[in-house]
Length: 182
Image (tube, rainbow, N blue to C red):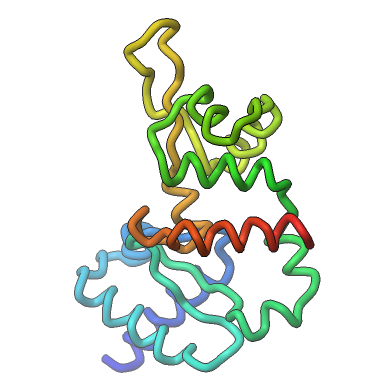
């Protein structure tokens, strides 16, 4: 039984290490025939998390989706990952994203009123291409403007389980200022 268990764990580990994105628990269960039970899968994932503690990679769970990530201690020492994972965004892009995250659903004109300047199409395009925002509906007013909100991908990329995990606004202002300066 232990050999079967270790082979199952190895298969999950291989799938997670080679995946380009988060894998859902359903996708992990589907690796097996017959399917693993939820309890069996959780046991295997917990074992993997424990085995990878205090190493260069960490197995994380975001909204029942799993992925290996480079731990913070080592991420800074691997410059090519920083370039790939941390593209530089303008202060305008970060401010717009923050407004959408904290005020959603919000129209473009509401974003402009908060920022005090117009929001260019390119800013909205950058955020939609990253799949961080999308149209959540339309406001019942003249012109039926689009209501923007964040996506599940936003939560995954920023390692948030929900919008309640967003940092306080004061912390966010410091992060935006720091990002724009570097």
